[in-house]
Length: 127
Image 1 (cartoon, one colour):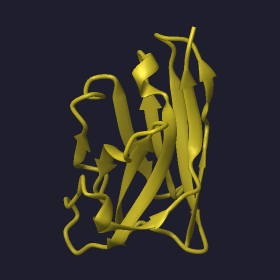
Image 2 (image 1 turned 120 degrees about the vertical axis):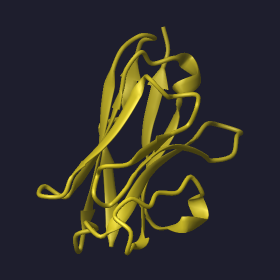
Image 3 (image 1 turned 90 degrees about the vertical axis):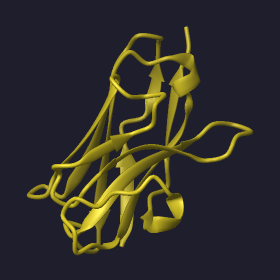
Image 4 (image 1 turned 180 degrees about the horizontal axis):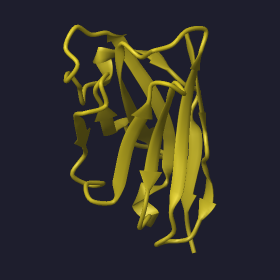
């Protein structure tokens, strides 16, 4: 399974951006999905996650209230809506999928729990 992330770009502080992630090969409707990011010179960090059902979400404190993760299992896409972007949001954003889960509510903030990864999409927030 390969994950294709798209939607990155250059925006100004306060702007919005929507990232999308779509798997190829087969659906990941049985997996939790997450977004992580890595800024230059820093370690990869958790951003947001959504359960396989879409009913439970988790966010890093730094993005809570500004970012929204959602999934459409019919269209097999996961979306990260990013509002009120700040310069510190600048990073390469990666979508990730977990192994299939029994629980419809399980999510994880730990990158080691995700086995499928996309190639990343660059988000740059600068005036």
